Amino acid sequence: MKYREGEIDFITLGCSKNLVDAERVMRQLEAAGWNCVHDPEEPKGEICVINTCGFIGDAKEESINMILRMAERKKAGKLRLLIVMGCLSERYRAELEAEIPEVDEMYGKFDFENLTLSLSKGEGKNAGCHSAPLTKEQGGCAPYERKLTTPSHYAYLKISEGCNRMCSYCAIPLITGRHTSRPKEEILAEVRWLVSQGVKELNVIAQDLSSYGLDIAKRHLLPELIDEMAQIEGVKWIRLHYAYPTDFPEDLLDVMAKHPNVCKYLDIALQHCTDHMLSLMRRHITRSEQDALIRKIREKVPGICIRTTLLVGHPGETEEDFEELKQWVKEMRFDRMGCFPYSDEEGTYANRHYKDDIPQEVKEARAAELMAIQQEISGELMQHFVGKTEKVIIDREEGEYFIGRTQYDSPEVDCEVLIKAKSEKAKVGEFVEAKITKAEEFDLYGEIE
Image 1 (cartoon, rainbow, N blue to C red):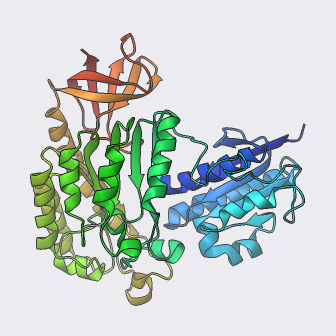
Image 2 (cartoon, helix red, strand yellow):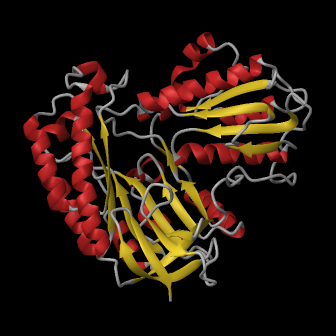
């Protein structure tokens, strides 16, 4: 058999927001009768859908290489249809169509659900043999339902799309457009559905959490949304990702302190600290304002884990800026931190108005130096867990260990807790109380009490 008829392979590249899009489309396609396989080790389906990322250079290259790889499979007769969707095709659709004619259909970031129609009987230029997806009223699935690809106990919950911030270096607004909040009741309905599927942990995501509600209610709705979400029976953990420091909804801190199932965790990208660089980056905030916000977050939610992201090598960053940034990282002692070298993205403000004047090797050296500082800080902070008992969700069993996370750790990007697998009290998808016995820079070891 050249390929498996009735089967669609989905390959998702990029962030968790992309993953949610893929999960939603797969659910609709399975309602239409297809069998969808996500990120297979060896694609065997008659159709392949590649959900692309177009954020920075490395991500674009990865997406293009995957498209070319699947195009070769199609040329060899091992694939009937090749479909591309997501951020890269949203941004470069015309170029991709011209350069890679093996792609049968191209969808962007907002019209991708139409591919369910193109694969329905009698519809689209490449009609298949399956019926169109049923609506919820017809016994099908609601638009927010998804084929979950994460472990069954956690899921990502996207509450908005797009961004209005227009930071100098960022291509996201060029891809996703203006910030658009999902209706609160629709999100809460999705939460109830996810809980009904066995999900215990909700990782709330958006390009800009801080702006949620401003477009539909002219006010911050994030505190209200999280407050109501926390009261839904079955929601054990809520974790917040990708807040923006400017115009941060400070009422959210009261909600975080109030509800024990809202994790003491906040992912807030700060990018830099000097007034010079914050201005060049168009962040609309000063160092003193940024520092005051971090102090307030720590004051109102004691023990909170703050994850941030920094950007080095942006045009105009001087040695003095970088030295101040290093000192600031040492002073702030972030619990979790990532650092990336600047990528000159066409169409951005920085690309149009600044010269990319810092050599790539300098950018990478600065990023490595900052991460070395953070590794030392992380090692010191992790030691504080030793001897304490923490609530841990078990994600998987691997070798001689159960692997889990505390409330201070997001899936796949943060620290993990390793527990000897001989423990009969540990079960994947369940919470345990673990006494931390050892700490390394990015891992903890524990025993179930």
